[in-house]
Image (cartoon, rainbow, N blue to C red; front, top):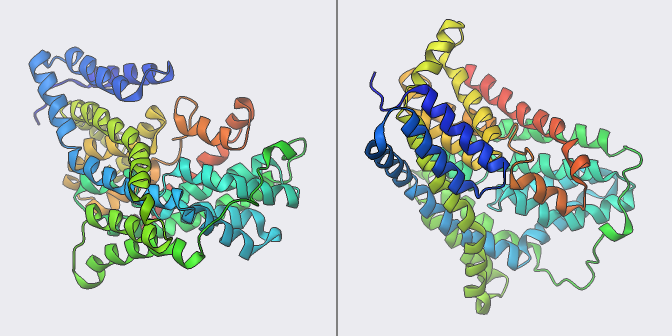
Length: 418
């Protein structure tokens, strides 16, 4: 058992990063500074600390590269109107009577095919508000339906959080996506139940000013809209089905290009690629900062002390997986940062304890969706803003969101135990 930093230093560095994030300091810089302070207080010395931070950041480069190329798919789905068309079709097919289920499923699918969860909610919001207004649903119920559906889709998606977890545990992205299929469905069911209850809330009606006109929007046909995501799914499925490995680095941008071609938007290719890059550059930079603090924590005694604590409490080692995902995501208010730090820090510890890499990654990934939407993160404000909701009202949804994330986490743990 060797380590470069003590547990107190690692924890203090994480606390500093959390405080800075809460104070609205840029998250990547907050994490980098937290890593530096943690290493110095942890007794590693300046040279060792910097080298560890650099090493941690370097370990994120393969994830960052895949995430940057995924921007082509995200940009194509959003700018061609494909994401909106998919959502609109689902909502229209299920109808007004099943509005909550339609909104949840639509957001889940949009997120699952490669659109980031906050963008998924923003994309579906105009359609959801319009149908919610007609059906007499509360704003809280509609927003929870979108958020819960997004959380379910997020653990099924080729999004940054999934890529980072699969990289840390060296497992197939497709396998990790499929591993959380049942937890995602269970989270979706709980979302629909809770959102239906909230949708009857009084004094929370959707105002006329909340609803945008959709009449002048020209969207592609459904077949063209779904073509890109289908190509991605087929390419990623070649490995488990036929042992033909197509890396996400190839599959995701190919899906984006197919979407652009199918919707007749080839002349806008450069524009859509630039838009997609603008959407992933922030999370790419965040992951570099995340890598620095993950490297410091990984090189500390924290993981050993946590294992010893679990043993003293007579708790099995696998509990570390969901618990670390929950705590790290809550600390950073980010699914991506939380799942990345937890995976980078505890991957070797969990596999050494006999927990299969795929199961450990799935439990961490699901755990990272429990309290990832706290007010010191951007997701809280982006989703509230998508439906013109006040901060006080938005905060009231956090316990419901936690129930959705906790559902997928519990189911992931049960599946591991079975």
